[in-house]
Length: 505
Ligand code: BES
Ligand code: MN
Ligand code: ZN
Image (cartoon, rainbow, N blue to C red):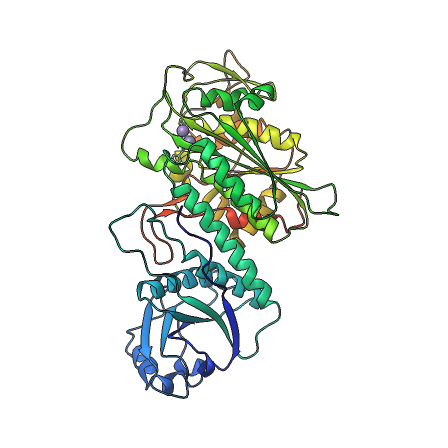
């Protein structure tokens, strides 16, 4: 596995920008700002800042970069980099969202330029601790390297050692904010590494072993149930999907039980852990099928969020459940028309074996309830339909009651995981009717992501529940300034942050 744990701690410093000691001092720059906003900067660069701004060479559009040598020897930085932050307040009241991205872009840029010692000046509106945390997250996200199986290319440059700097006195709480950001960034990177891992190395057993080791870093209690235990529990949906594979399924169970925590609420996190989705007998077309190695991204998010929850010592009880299996065709595979019985007792007619995520999550949600969850959140690369609806930027949110959905949306927004609520009107439930069983596993093409959510709802026992469909957001098909191609680590920070909330119901 690639090394994704942080190489060195991020230092903090405060005082005059001229006193910041670094090879490269990165300064977020908002549109319309003049050189005088940062006193001494223009003179330190012999007028280069003024020049680039008046010539409109650097316009402070997001991720624009302008680098100038510092000629004034009373400054300790060798060079400064202005990095465009766009219009101030364009992401709402706080600048956290844009700073997280800019810090990640700066981290990638510094690495590309083989900068050894870099500093990032925190500038923006909103709570200083939140901004600092966002910067630490961004810098940490930039440490991720996805080319772990390359043998002929030179190793990529080590990440720069970073200092987060403040112009003037460091605001209260920034030391803790850096370590929070570090943990959340690392946990996101660990989830990215798992989702990038191919199906032949990350089998359900290997996934369970690695995810368990990751969660255990946060002193999380971990249990892995094998196929015999699953059969004793009657998990016919999970076992049904696993039938086509020679690799046995697993169910990971994570528990965070802080001493003295109240008995309720118990946050229940459930993640889809399909280590490879061929579609099964309803096999997928070959084109692009390799991406289906990331069909366990939801499960990885749950395991890695549990690590963060433990390391950050969240005050509430949390249980995590990750059903893991391959979805393969084979002589013993389930077939369209087969009937499966869930652990809860409900029967399902399998119309399409490619709608496997909802099957394993049905048993997973039931198990989270059995463990005492009072509030459920599931995360899954569940439907192509959500990609049609919301694209690759926004995860779909489904659930009930509205206040709980809205709380998850708000927390996700702050964590940098964009999401948007979708309707789960009971009127759509008709599409899941089966002639022979309690319900069918598909509802046809119309509203495909909604009927998938309604299928899951059948297994929530009426608890407050949110389903996050990350089929569009778990994987980046193109290189972005702040993120290379590949697994994104979506939902890790959202799930971890929820464990610090007063849960709505
Ligand atoms: N893992 C896929 C969903 C998916 C599609 C994730 C594209 C990422 C990108 C899921 O198991 C699936 O195959 N869903 C089917 C459901 C259909 C058969 C009802 C789909 O969306 O086509
Ligand atoms: Mn599928
Ligand atoms: Zn799938």
